[in-house]
Length: 91
Image (cartoon, rainbow, N blue to C red; front, side):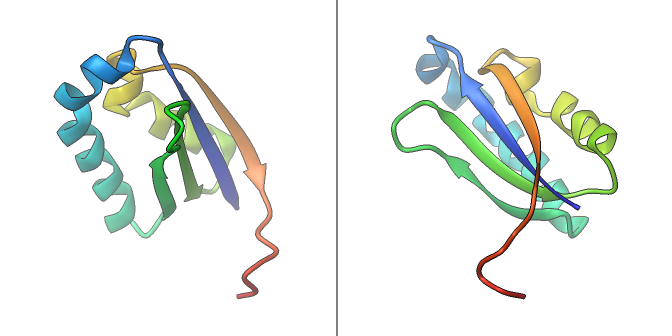
């Protein structure tokens, strides 16, 4: 199943983000090595980040979210997780 993770940036995250970015990227690389990362990146308007993962359950996604250094260090002030159905491009 696919899930969208939307991390909403905290107001002061721009100043603190660079400190935690290497650990956050390492976290995403771990998900990618496991074959579960579909795509990830920051929203260019500074609102936060979008991550799409393939997981067995929403519980697995929340466990992944909990290990993210951006969550642990308050870069994301709020996180949403939503099930997602890819329609395009067709697989």
